[in-house]
Image 1: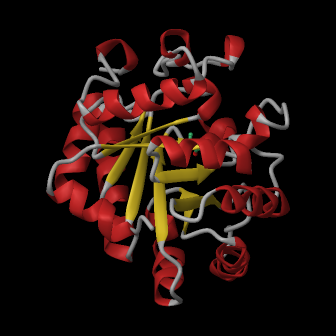
Image 2: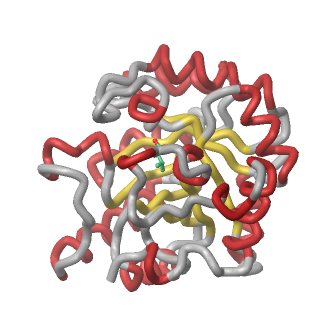
Length: 262
Ligand code: KIV
């Protein structure tokens, strides 16, 4: 069984790891058999499974359902569960919703946002719920950002992201996802934090990587982001594609410069 302690050890050993989103038992089993040790039931399922144009329609019941499905496919992976839009607007709401996700089989809950969540993160960890933060291009804030745009490009927003990352760690977060920020900023945050940092669209400098499974398999059509890579086109089979994704991340070959932002 992979635990957060393994991820911490890998960070200290500078051993990179690949993780992936997953939404059902069949893929969870297959990914686990190929060596994936960290999986996320992300609210990206609103777009990848439900066909919405954003993650906002996803409910806590949706995440619970998919956590149950994934847990039946793998008993050994570290399973991250997303708290969906508005399910953690207050600490009390976060405690209640995190509890049902943990009961469904999650090992850690993920929420989007920075220092405004300090009390929530602190309260969750004190109540035995591990927390993964998520900063950068946080998709639940798409209407605030005015689209899916790279974050942290100017000095002020970069400093703000670093401050938020430190605040989350200070509040007790044990893991952090950085989405779509410049490589130099991702490198700085990864270096300054003691907790493991997982990147998506943030360069090869983070401790781990995560991709949406449909992007790894090249089946996202015109929704595939520029930072992703279709591993199935050269892999030959889904299993081989996952193995080559893991290998490329572990060797530091993925993401390459063309999958990163400066
Ligand atoms: O919802 C999701 O799948 C995510 C990842 C893209 C990090 O948050």
